[in-house]
Length: 177
Image 1 (cartoon, rainbow, N blue to C red):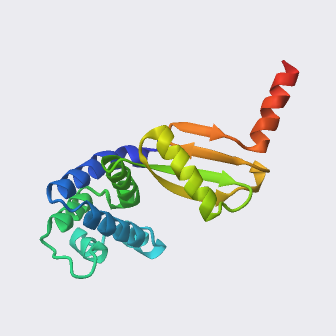
Image 2 (tube, helix red, strand yellow):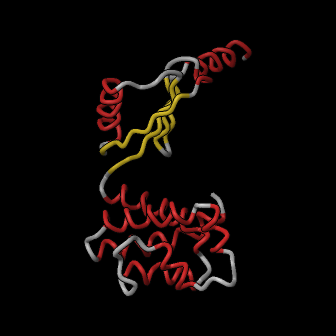
């Protein structure tokens, strides 16, 4: 785990608690995604590190249009700015998203396959993984030609290697032992 993730964790938890208290998890999620996208822009990153730019100015830049400067969300960003933690805003947003998914019983699963996963296969995978993990599945797929065939399913703590490459590696190990 990176240092930024460690620093971001308590802020993500605080944001999550504030949003849950206000029954506004979805709204805060969208606002944090917006702020993280803005903060990850190279020009904005330079502003965040510039001592000539005040925390208030930075918070104003990171607020979505129409957000009041005295809202709980604006105060949260102000706390990040005051503690010089705006550089980890992307990690805070990611940590918030993880906490939100956990509270909703959703598991994010990444599937790597040599070919695109079509809609029918994605639904079949979701159904099987929902049955196995007892949670709703948020499926993210990517093409990885090194897999050769089959797929590698990464569900956080559980990795299921059903790839041809994985099978070949296991066969090679068995033959050498």
